[in-house]
Amino acid sequence: MTILPFARASTATVSSTATNSSDISVVKKLKGWRPRFFMLMAIFIAASSITVGVLGWKLTFNAAKDNIEDLVQQIEDLISNRISAYILDQSDGMSDFVALQQDMFRENIFSASTPTRKNRTLQSMLMLLNRNRRTSVDIFFVTYPAGEISGYTYNATGSLQMWTQQGMTVTTWNCDDAGVPIGNPYSISTNIGDGTPKNPGNNNLLDNDTGISVAHVWNGRLFKTTVGIAVNKITGEKVVVGGDWTMVLLSQQLDIIHASIPYPLFIGIFGTAGSLIASSPRIINLSQDKSRMLELRELNNPFITDFTGYLNITYGAQLDFQSQLKLLKGFLHNKRDAGEPFM
Image (cartoon, rainbow, N blue to C red; front, side, top):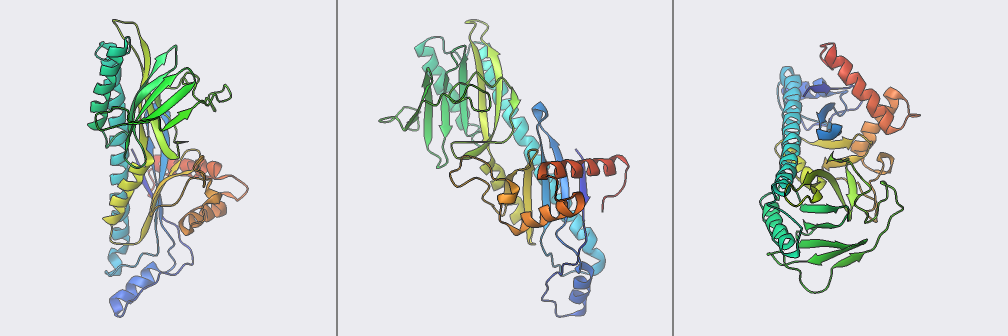
């Protein structure tokens, strides 16, 4: 993994309350600096990648001017290292989480071959989920060829719910701590979709991808899903197992990193499709009905405006954000391959 710092100058002024010569020197040193950017490419399993952009916002340091550049560089390195370590740890954790489920089904420890075995499997899966709450917010399996999902999830409020499916009808139940459904169904979905992987509805067999998905919206939350296939060596059952990493967890981690830096800054993570996945401070990145991710041009935020403004000036406003980001990524890689310091 390569971390490439990227700073750009402009005519912006850095505010200060400096009252002595040392502070004035600092302001002069920083005068003309705009938010600093650096990019970090983290390659996920299944060739999924994200780009991390960190923007320092009007930084004012009470330090000697000769130390300013080193201090900013150290802050950038600290942030990028912590973000990359967390993302890679989460990717490894999700992969291990799903691989364990695959092994359980392969070795006939998990099975849905009978109602009794299915219930036991679900109880064991709930225990596994509870031990991995910092990694995944749900755990599930989909039978093949029936395509029916079963599993548990913790919703946005942290309440435990259970999924069951019969045909194209998916039922969600509120559960007690032991995973036993309580009362009437919380919701019933009969969405048949349009028969395509892009809009499968409750047809869980249309999307045949394995590994880690791109970020996507489901039930008003943003997820990256990890799935794998297993065949029970005793019963012959074929299942798809998986779990979901909610981007809320990523934003929470960014908040922790942000809080450890005693200077105003902004941390944003952009997906390869050009949407904002997570940030600190938080920016609303879903539509009002929470059905889709907002495009960058729909985000009314000064940090995003500054970032897109830089890309428009550098690569031309006629290109969309995704194309601009690809050009920036290529530029960063060229700088790295040439062994040049990127300033």
